[in-house]
Length: 174
Ligand SMILES: CC(C)(COP(=O)(O)OP(=O)(O)OC[C@H]1O[C@@H](n2cnc3c(N)ncnc32)[C@H](O)[C@@H]1OP(=O)(O)O)[C@@H](O)C(=O)NCCC(=O)NCCS
Image (cartoon, rainbow, N blue to C red; front, side, top):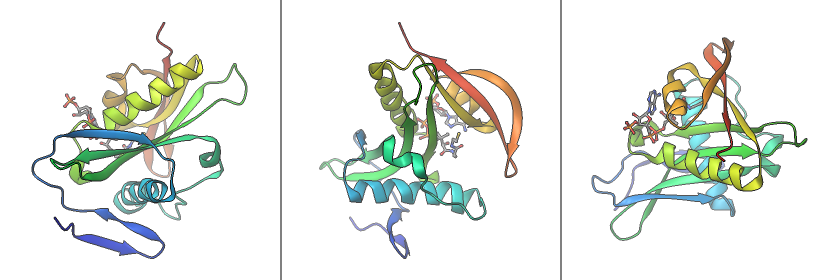
């Protein structure tokens, strides 16, 4: 099946049309250039294009030492459509929390469980590494999404470039 795309110089096209029938969800740790570019294209689609954050750089210095994951919808013949991403940055000091950021699912794939699967992958990685606490800056509309994954509110609402956020934390499961 061919997927209509929008091209941007230097980045792979992001999927616009998804198949009606998908058989599951696949989440992998980004380990090659194609997956990395797909993850950055999803960041760009959601945070730069959809949310219109001005002058957004979709990569930062923490990428190199972080676990970046790519979530895909899987078709009946094993085809994969990358639609979601997220990142876990391990703490520098043992007493610090791990940080989750850049969590996004492209608009046309939301509500199909891929974002939650990406988060579960990141949280399992944090738990395995022994990180006691994981923190994130939740966009206010996504608070329910994070609460269902075990996060609790940990501060007041604050503004980041016009978008309300709140710090949320989650402690390692015993
Ligand atoms: C938040 C986001 C990543 C969720 O991705 P997704 O792939 O749609 O999530 P899922 O399909 O796995 O949703 C899991 C559950 O959370 C719910 N949910 C998802 N987004 C939600 C939101 N913004 N508010 C409330 N509930 C939400 C879904 O309805 C679903 O519930 P269900 O299991 O009862 O059906 C996605 O909506 C997104 O990219 N939003 C814009 C960017 C953003 O806010 N990123 C977070 C930055 S902190």
